[in-house]
Length: 334
Ligand code: AMP
Ligand code: TRP
Figure 1 (cartoon, rainbow, N blue to C red):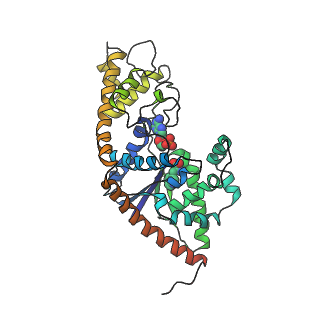
Figure 2 (spheres, rainbow, N blue to C red):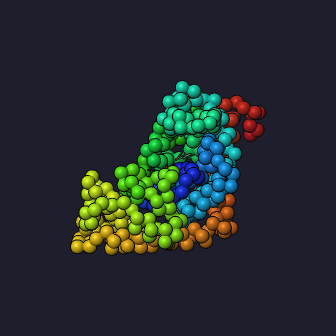
Figure 3 (cartoon, rainbow, N blue to C red):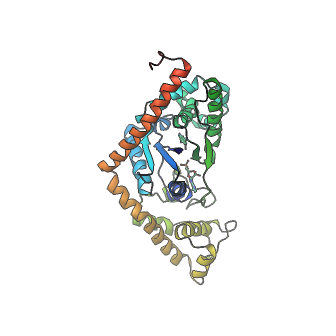
């Protein structure tokens, strides 16, 4: 069966920006691509390329797995697993490193940016990150890899490495295609509507996290920056604040900007924000309920065990085959 594969880093907090802009579309794929088998994993090995607190990392890994299921990822459609539970990821990363060049890794934009920002020592892991990502992908021969635009360069490198290894080792890998997410709405910060709502923004007021309680959700919407015109009109250039709130409204309710404007004619921000607070809360409520059901349950462990078992089998086979083609170890017995 043809495959789709993607990884998610367990860092930061999922917020309505990532949810409406990405997670929702992602979840849609499992229904719109019924002929494909899905492999989705929590990329915890990637998270430690920069230092991480032990307990925080543990919690994030589980939280993210539970949240993706709560957002609608279906365990019967998707193999969900944790990267570090499958040793083959690290094994293949090493084999790929022996077939990649320092020059091509030095060209990676994300490495250049992250290493510049890093205050203490830059680790070798941060440098070789793209080869680990290539390993994550090539182990499973997926045809498509849904990623955000920021990961496109890493995917191009993965294709280069795959083609190079195919020439050397008799077409061992499927060359994957990026599936650049259908651009969902871009949700802006609630305190500065000219910049993106970000999971790493130090200002908590800038975003609504998926697990925020009702009173916080409503408070954040209420205190969202608008302007002093007081009318509900979509005009992102001149009135980014209210336009951003209308975008959130529109994506959740599927109502057009025209029809939102119409229904709020003669009404002000107070009423609009009260309604929007309720709309966002109602959207997140079932996700939160499902999340709290899952987070400490053995159901979540069963899902992650099953995902790991299916993935580990595929991955182990690939490693054995490649070891053999490289000439490692002993010749395989027939
Ligand atoms: P990140 O976790 O920030 O790397 O983002 C993961 C995915 O969510 C990427 O595809 C981003 O484009 C998308 N995303 C993150 N923040 C937002 C936002 N505020 N609005 C829309 N999409 C977003
Ligand atoms: N590097 C990706 C990110 O930061 C996460 C990731 C790791 C990934 N391995 C992957 C995505 C393999 C797609 C395929 O978002």
